[in-house]
Amino acid sequence: MEPEKPDPNAFSYDPDKNYDEATMVQQRQIEKQIADEHPLVSERLSFDQLTKEYMEEDKIYQSKIEDLQSRYQFFRKTRGDGNCFFRAFGFAYLESLLKDRSDLKRFKEVITKSKDTLVELGFPQFTIEDFHETFMEIVEKVENGCTIQELVETFNNQGLSDYLVVYLRLLVSGHLQKEHDFFQNFMEGGRSVKEFCNQEVEPMGKESDHIHIIALTSSLGVGVCIEYMDRGEGDKVTSHQFPDGSQPVVSLLYKPGHYDILYK
Image (tube, rainbow, N blue to C red; front, side, top):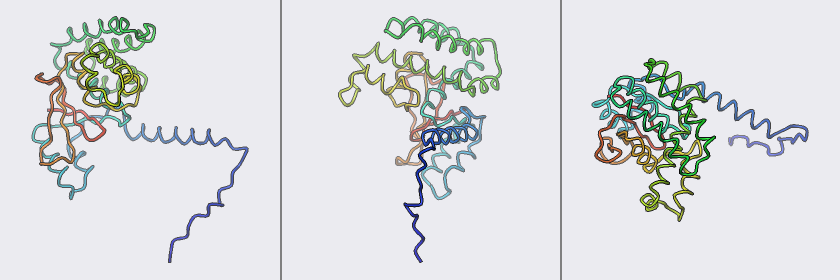
């Protein structure tokens, strides 16, 4: 017996009902559910949590998780909202400064000077100052020796966390435009570097690729190791260091379309 098909005439349009508002309410409910179930930055997790995400029969991913476990002890999830690379990088690097302050002075000087550099490149000063000020407040919180838990709470404050992400995006945009002669060679579709920045870098929620990683790590002078876990051949994950030849301070796990934080 075939299942009964839905009656297309069963839907009755109500001219007095605001369907746009109903859609927005539903969207807000979905966003709230995501926020409740997936914090912007999670606590540290064991790899058992990652193993559970894939079926036992999925030999490719199971073997690659085993490879990760041979070199890393924990991981920390970030919310998959298109900003995960910037949020993961920002949290992981600031957390590393809580444990080893040797790079703190240099990093603070880089961030302090970056505001004037962005203004010189044509970014509006009143906008830059707002995001820069919040970024510096978070850096100073680390400088004053906040706890890791306080840093987690800061990154799970949507307003503060998003301001930090915005500033990191602006740093990437600024670096790409400053070095446009070099990066123009990597632009596809006939776009200029400026157009790429306007469309793929500065807007929130836009996913990050190699070009974003190269620009951010180069502009800040911070080495990052990305462990690529995908369905490529072999039972090992593929590691890449950015910039080339650097000593990684931060390790991130990349699964197609998403970044999490790894801990040795």
